Structures are given as structure tokens and as C-alpha cells.
Image (cartoon, rainbow, N blue to C red; front, top):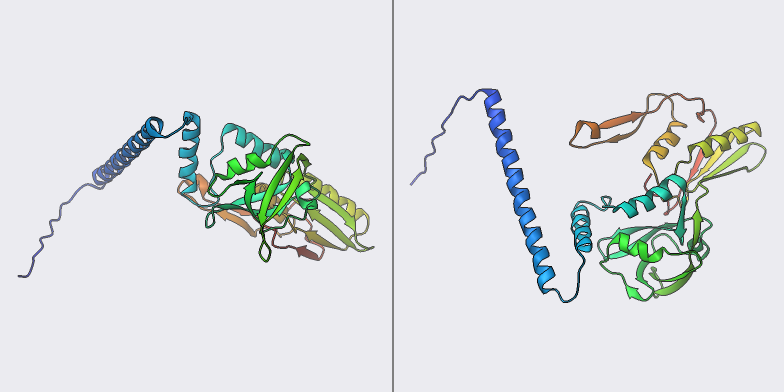
Length: 295
């Protein structure tokens, strides 16, 4: 038998309809969050009651928050206060203690991949390469461990040692023992290659623009007519620094980067502007390799 459907049309004032829809949406959100919270609390209760061994509340809290961020994409990450201070210290001042490796989580294998070793550090001197996979730290398999936990195991007091087991395509896994040191990132180095060609090495996008501008001024004073920008093994850093550097090489009115998001403040376009430190009047060569990433 053929089914018949009746469509009932109701005229509702637009403001009333909008209020109803918004209220329904917000109520649904609240109910969903309440149900999620109940699941989290129940799971935590079962762990505390039945898991063999003690689990600190702080550790569970960190795992919950970190897990939510990990469910999004590889570039979303939760920081504790200490982790943020460590990140801020590296990104803003370029100083920290460790072995000098930029790493990222490999969700396909559960291990950690080397993005790049930092120049003039224990890792760089030991010939650790971009793409190497860390599979053990001091003999402990790190598969599935949180990235921040792995980084904490690599870091340590100056002069102490850490052994990292690496997997590299084309050879059997091997150990590298490194002595931790104070890592000071010299983000910009420069020199004249000959009487006309300048060279600027940018190893990290910390707050490096003052160093870069000073380098360019020095090269100009020595007769620079062209420039090589070396970004090999530059693992990234601060977006603002990368944007400001790009602005040095672009004429006014060019789109440098755009961002998208749900909130109005998250949607923006950054355009290039004229500036006294622009370097657009000379030929430019840019060097990159597999260790050039992010910013």
C-alpha cells in the first residue's frame, strides 16, 4: 500500500524560531556534556577501585585532557603549566636543557618521529636524522606513550646521559647515547659567500627578527647584491616570526597567511606591508630539505 505523508506548515515569527532552535541546541549541548562528564567520572571511579596499582588523580586528569586533544589532529596538544613554561622558554628565549631534537607523534605506529635535530647540539653531532623513529628511551619501549611524557624522558639535568633506540629505513634499530646539555638556539647566522652574495642561516623561528634584521644590515654594508636564505633543518617555531620574516620579502598587499575558525576572532588574513627592513630589492635563493617544517 502506498504511504502518504502530510506536511504541516506552521508560520512562526523568525525571532521566536531562532530562540527555540538556539535553546534546543544549547540544551542538547548541555545534556551531551553532562552525559560525557558522567562517563568520565564513572570510568575514573572504576579505575580507582579496580585497577591493580595506584593511579594519581592528577595523572588521570592529564590523560583525560590530553586524550581529548589527541582525538582532534596531530597539531592539537594539551600543556600543563610546567609544559607550557618549558615550551615558552624554548620558543621565546631559545634556551632549554636536553639533547636538541624536534619530535612529533606518529599516530600510525605509536612511536615518535624526529622532525629535525637542532644545529650544534648533541643530537646533531650524533648524526640523528629527520625521519628517524624513536622506539625506546633508556631501554623502555615508548610505543603509545604520550608525546610530552616521551619528551620529559629525553630531557634532564646537564651532563646526564640518555640512550635512545632509533629505527631508520634501510638498517636495523640502533642505540645512540647522548649527553644532555644546555641547548642555546642561535637562530640566525650570516656571512658573505663572496664579494656580492650574502648568506643567512635561520635554524629556528624563535623571536629571531631582530637578529635577522641586524644580519641583513651587516650584509648590505658589505656590498650584498643577492642573498641565500638557508632553512635546512629548520623545524619551525613561532607563526608570528615566520609571518614577519615573509613580510620582509613581499611587496605590499600580498596574502601571507590566513586562518579559519568558528569564532570571528579566529578568522583572519595577514597581508604584507611596506617596512624599512624589507629585502625585496635583491635576488633570493631559499634552501630547504626534509627537516624544513611547520612555520
